[in-house]
Length: 442
Image (cartoon, rainbow, N blue to C red; front, side):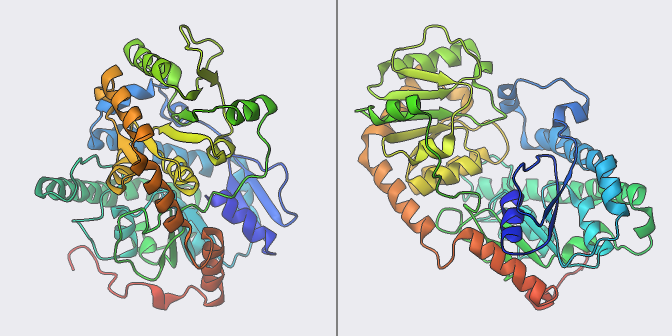
């Protein structure tokens, strides 16, 4: 989400400097890139990349302890110690605003103090508990879930109790250990700021604006402060790029429609256990529809005649095609928004992170079906796919949710740019923040 925001700011005449691991080969003239090494989290943690499907059995606490906390520290330090970032810090830069990713990279907040500029946070997550901690938005335990918590019935007594327990655990660990580790990075790599800068805990209370990847028409509605702005769907623009000719022909000629299967970039279908892979193949074989499956190998044995595999598919362009009847996904929020915008129903198998909650919302809204990974077999998968394909309420609801999601006075991008420029014009817009930025004991 940060990349399209930076590009659009530059397109509108702002002088933009971006710290990134992905180079834009055709940037606007006033878009300056500090490109750091794109080291994968597994390499930073010094471990072999696991089969992602094995992570489904991790509890939320274990996922934080083994992956999120150490990964966030390692990734942040990897940027701070890079020659490109160090050289950037040596320059005599002046900025009107500092925009940072919110997710476990808190040491970057110190740049707002280095450049005496308002701090804006952007997150790829939807409305979740961590945003309330940061901005001092009132906690809403009954409806707003921790972003990575798996709870099948979140509004029940036990669901709310689980949310409370994990939120307390998460806050204490984040506040008293994780932020301290991020503080060490500030002291190590920005020593000239050590005496001037307040703690990261105090610093994040001063966030001028938080842009979150949600919209009340799909996400759980919540009471939010004026400095929290929803921009769900911002990454999406209608594509004018043509599909490859053979793929276009395949989609156009699919008289029974197309089922599109993609578990994202981190979850590799080729790592499915044999029994799970065979369940998918046997179910696809029974369908009348054409099936496209992102399969990260040139070979797939026992492939049915209606199944077409590739190592990569142009997902945005595929989901726009009118013959797409169903999206089978892992429930990543970016892909979910693409399905919503195009009015495509979803069957999802969440693996980790926020995927479970994203798919729970789709199921609750009536345009999706959630299957837990451990419960995936030929019978359950067939039942889920056929229910969504042949029960007209799913496609009708998907179209209605799409209409509501797109029904806004400004596009998500225009909304983001308006509020970013608003914060600049009003020198941080102090009056939008919660005045009760109290300490824990208070």
